[in-house]
Amino acid sequence: QVQLVESGGGLVQAGGSLRVSCAASRSIFSMDWYRQAPGKQRELVAAMDSGGNTNYADSVKGRFTISRDIAKNTVYLQMNSLKFEDTAVYYCSAKTGALSVAYWGQGTQVTVSS
Image 1 (cartoon, rainbow, N blue to C red):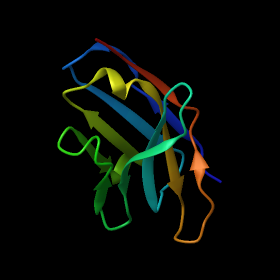
Image 2 (cartoon, one colour):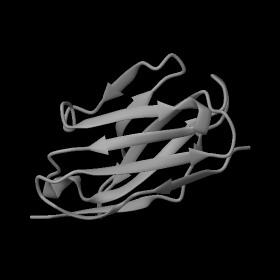
Image 3 (cartoon, rainbow, N blue to C red):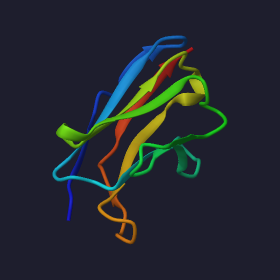
Image 4 (cartoon, rainbow, N blue to C red):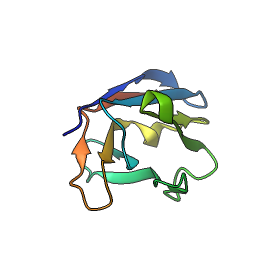
């Protein structure tokens, strides 16, 4: 098993930046960031595979960047040019191997004021 702890959420004005982090209790194979806004389904925001390849939702391309610190078992999501519609609870999800189950963090709230 692996425990995931997100941090770094908060309140920011539109156009501002925020970085959220996800620290894993052990080494991970891949990690994704999801978000869920009130009344909406959870959606994939950014993904990074074991090779460091990244993928982004169209709505955040050019504004969000996923990165990792392998030594710290931590993945980051840098969010720039934030918009009101980015307001959501952000969750990290990780796998410890290609065929492992997905583990989830508890989520961190990001609120963008217009």
